[in-house]
Length: 182
Image (cartoon, rainbow, N blue to C red; front, side):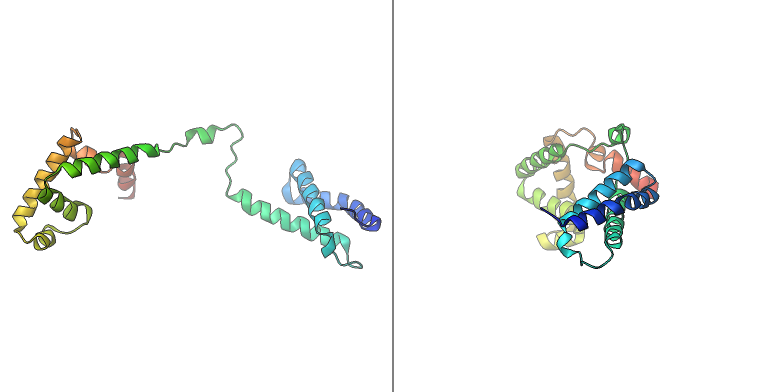
């Protein structure tokens, strides 16, 4: 792209003032130089928007200021971690374990007798009370409680879970978060 030589000269004359302004905004010479460079690149790319006869320096300062604020908003969400120490402290549980556990659960549920699976899913997964589940199944509340208990015990056996409370309850991370809130 070619630009008029008088516009180019105006840009070059404004560069020291742009740099001083950028340094005052960033307090960092390297970041200021990058900001001035990006300002000039944007100005050249958008030179068709410049109104001849208006103040070129004001136009460039506006571009620089807008770039600085855009960069500031972006950087505000970033964490500086040049040596990677912060990133090394972050950990995410592997996702495939949950998928495998869910597959195991589906297979074990399929092996339960229909009445036990139905009672367990109504109470455990759907959140119905024992009374509501009994009404849905057309049986006594005690029968539902018995079916749910037998289903939980059988499910634990099928999935080879030693301690039913520990394995089916919240994990350690969730428990510590719940304790911190309480």
